[in-house]
Image 1: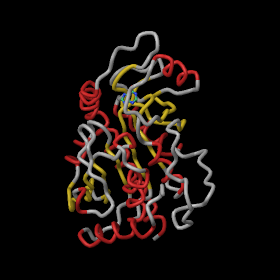
Image 2: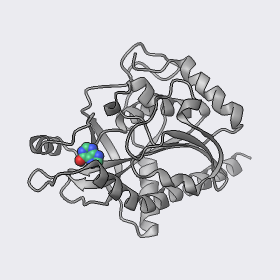
Image 3: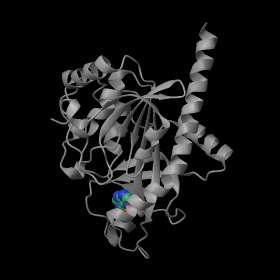
Image 4: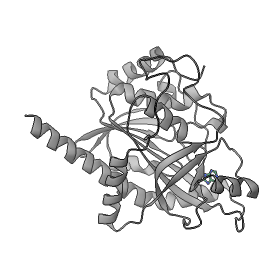
Amino acid sequence: MNSPSFDQVAACADIVRSKWDCVPRVGVVLGTGLGGFVDEMQIEATFERGDLPHFPPATAMSHRGRLVCGRVGSLPIVVMEGRFHVYEGHPLDQVTLPVRLMRALGIELLILSNASGGLNPEFHTGDIVVLTDHINLMGLNPLIGPNDDRFGPRFPDISETYSPHWRETALNVASRAGLSLQQGVYVAVTGPNYETKAEIRFFRMAGGDVIGMSTVPEALVAAHAGLPVLAFSVVTNECLAATTVPVTGEDVVAVANEAGTRLRHLLLGVLAEFERAAIARTKADS
Ligand code: HPA
């Protein structure tokens, strides 16, 4: 069974609501090395992995795997500090449970972040990329199995999974802050190994700009639910068939940590724009 049952998600949501009486507007999943973002929040409730039923233990390097609820400014948000990966052996129902939970709590925008290898020769180590699209080469899909229409339709249209509106907002925030922000297509593989040179040539030929081991299962369940996605990728290593150098998990975490400060800035800017738009809508409605 790929999909968490509706009742499992509802049970998690009840536990969160029993401690945090608030409807989050935005959900954020923090990838490798990017967990420091929670320092920007006024934290109101936290849930360790063991506090929520059906959540797996997190084992990935630098991934804490806790759910943090609180505010940035006055905007209520819910954050997964770390995520669950397919390469850890977790089934896709557990990998995607945090996003389904965030949706059940009421989020209107999902922001994902990850570390990736740069396939595009114009991308360099440390670059931040906003995703325009993805190619799912995991050979897995969290929507396989009986469809529960309460999550979304049997055959969802995913042609605009990555919201053009929020991508444009992120590009504007970056440009105002003088931060460089690339755009590109994410190729998803399961890992845990990095790629062979032949695979790198193939993924580049297929149209990939960055490659990583996460994000797509989460983006698919969001798209299923009609939830807009904004996704950022930090290029932690250059993945070029001709010149690639051996990469280690420690290198990846070190670069992601360094880029974390810039990504934090971008996330705060996008959340401020979200809040501004929400306030303007409320004023227009009253
Ligand atoms: N390949 C796949 N996943 C990754 C990489 C990579 O080169 N770098 C960081 N995550």
